[in-house]
Length: 426
Image 1 (cartoon, rainbow, N blue to C red):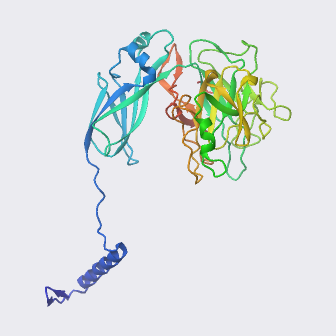
Image 2: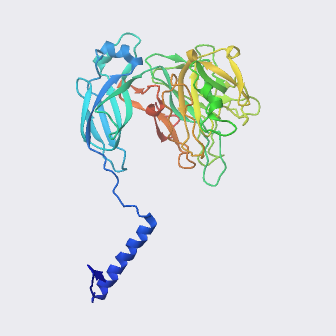
Image 3: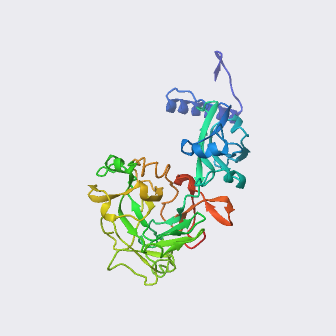
């Protein structure tokens, strides 16, 4: 081997083999990389940021009543590293002036924020203001973050009637065909007053998740982002003459596609015979005579011939006050006639996307943010998610001895997943 113009003899066979191996590896790597140099990825710089907790503009009146015009004091903050699965959360608390200083941070973090109102703080609110706290969720990426970051927190309110649990997508067990009829929706009275369910309308709204060539997002987007209401063609109306079906404070009501025992028909079906209402599609539909029927009043019959179904992909579930079906505005698009459920009638709207990946680009919105600020996307994989439901989160205290559910008009924040329990309280 030549070294500085001289020949050096290596007498140790092992050292000779080692040098030849290193030399060959270097030549191969150089050929594969085309002469490029191997470099370490750039190191994300360590920085410091200050979070500033502000009230969302929609909730300015609530903040003013509390004297929080300059910031939200005492916010509980959970900071979790998002770059690694083993990131340990940090539990912190904001200052009395509504800020939190984060020192020596680097990378990407998810940040969850909560500030629940005390009894004395709720007593400061004017009559009709049903706020119970403020919530937010955000992501921090230190490489592009400014040194001061305002975070808008949204009020969580009692609201009234809310969807407390939803399982409306198809169920499919291993090696068996899809079963569509074991879906349900559970309502909860989140107030301190009795609410009568007579005439309420429950439906499945327009929900287009993927940008299919024949049915592109652009076809549905003007309707999905309609601020005047939610478009639907499948919806049912609860029976009653005005005071026949009271729901007491903290009470629940289960609405089933078919109020039967599904277990003999499907291995992971549910026993829904105790449902409070059954969606009914007319002659030929399964009918439990012991459960009041909610008849179909939509713009087209359900092709499955059963009660209300939600799609297996994206879904929108809504609850509306009693309305005159004949007075609804209708339009024909996507080869179907749709009706607009007006904003003034809507009580709760829940938008969901499946986690299934179709290969097509996903549409950005399912409904206008006036009805749901951000959809939830946690379920949808076959088999794995079939025994889970979307369940609304509860706030960490009770009022008058009853659970209070979180309602921020943001499904992504308000709902988590849990085993199906249609008759649980709440």
